Length: 283
Image 1 (tube, rainbow, N blue to C red):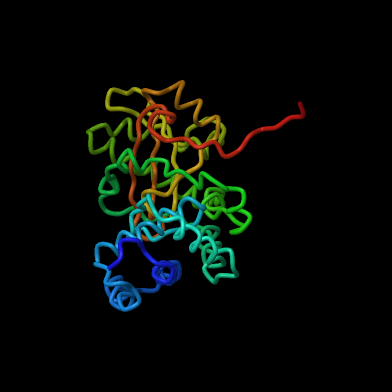
Image 2: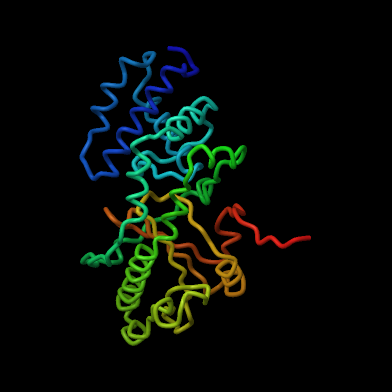
């Protein structure tokens, strides 16, 4: 077994991953174990662990170029340049995954029926090394031109998905306050994005058991925990001005198995921020 993966091995792993991703986007079942069994004869005596890591590398590449990924393969950086090029070359072609991805990120999202135990949605946030998964750092413009669409940015503009996530976050807060023995505060939870508009810098007004305000900004994705999200300048500024009361609720796997993690404090301290747009005026 050679240490470096060959071109043919990289192509095989990328094709296998994209096949599984296609099935996942169509809600069709597949077996990772069976895929790995079929893949092994095409590889140079690779272990299951090394194949798993390579699949995780593909997830990291997809996130960096703004594409959906398989949540079951947690993104792992430090991949070969050859792997990055293989993924982007595949998707630069008229790949059948592209219309599937666009359909997934733009389709209407209905409000979810809350699970019996809403508080069970809460999980730990990603490890600090994973926060804000950086986007393609070099040659980004060229990569965007090759792929054509930033699907994660397109999902961020899906208002029905955002509204469904905000509603679920408000219901989570009501359940949290009731569980803390504060039913009167629970009755005062307000989905301000619906009642007052989107420009406040937060979506849900809730409370601490003491009665102090809790300002919650909600970001929702259908994809995995490490999927990056977009912030407005207003949201960032609000988090700085109200760092004690501000919480970001990140809802992920929303359509299939929703989960939530929370970050408290200034977003420039709890997240790695990557500027993606500038407001330009003539000099």
